[in-house]
Length: 299
Image (tube, rainbow, N blue to C red):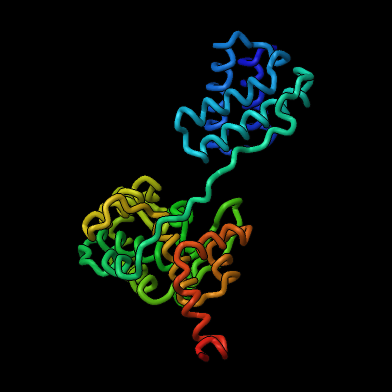
């Protein structure tokens, strides 16, 4: 079996036996298509002929081509998994990636808004139309609850417990967590549910909280467009929904919130992911120290 055929077998294995998402299978498919084509240009089509120097050369070519570190890391993971599959499935015995390390990925600090910028975004005038009420609620909930876009669009009415000040959110890996929705976020969400959602829903039954103008569940792309639109009006061009999530976490930590609590609110499986936010702005650490330590101000 040649590499091209083995690639198709591997993608089928990922989809059927591993239950990988369509996005993962598609991304690995593109990475491996590029890998197999790169090897073919060098006269290699048999899995047994792939050597460690060839694999390392491909990785180096990806870096030289200017791919983002995260894209290179994913491509290496795809290649490693591909060769592991071929050995396990007895397509070949060569295993040139047995101890191939993932490329070092430089730490990338998330972009965050200042408290003043967040206020400018959220305090701007919103239309009193159903879509205006919806858009205001979307921005307030993204910043006030720290949701991912997929969590926001996946939010259903039965998971919105405004009387208790809570949202039941389904995050990565279908893990459910409960997050508070209070203050400005609760007020904007309540206004939208009371005066905006019904007009968008019409006669079409849909459990989603956030609806499009046809009464269906709002898409992730639409949320991106909404955030970018109001960000541009507030003088924040190119604003991304995830920036609001990053800002939520950073502002909580700067306000003295416990790291473990922020981890739970964000739905991070690993606290190391949450710790990244402590590097964004360390100025609050000095303030907390000065306020908390009994001898910090003693000359």
